[in-house]
Length: 190
Image 1 (cartoon, rainbow, N blue to C red):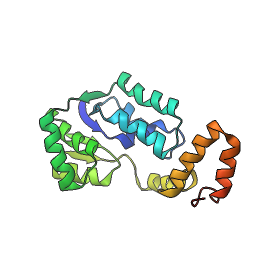
Image 2 (cartoon, one colour):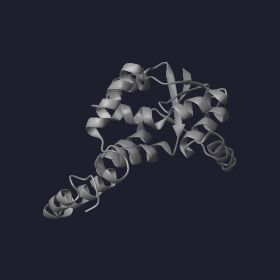
Image 3 (cartoon, rainbow, N blue to C red):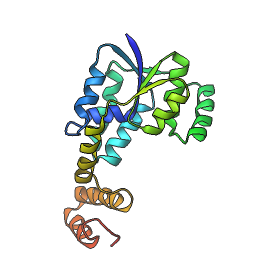
Image 4 (tube, rainbow, N blue to C red):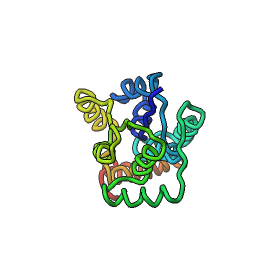
């Protein structure tokens, strides 16, 4: 089997059943030619992204993230010396922590390729001598942009207001409705 590192976004897209890239990402993950590797931080990232970005309920996001530990994914070890090198790479390439740790895992374990849809990670991987690929093509990307416009709130304040509204809805639907109205349908502060 060929070794391939797997970034969080590929996993998340495959989990989101109505996401335009779900099928292509799921197909890659199910490709039996590969043995997939990631870091132990990836399930945490999956949980965070599902909750904070895609608004998946806590129990469902937790269940999906925890299921990764039962999946055929192999988790690489993170040693202090790996973290030190990865932290420097974060600065050098302006990478997120887990992305840099994923590159380090590839270098340590002789994993020759990495799948991601993060262009910054893909570029840094290539510079570090790791073959990178994104299963997402132009037609997927266009559908993804449209899907995100329809399904996701804008980043920043509207996203924060949506989280507050969702929380209020669970504890007091009447107050939640007042909040919704006083924020102009979650567009500005009350």
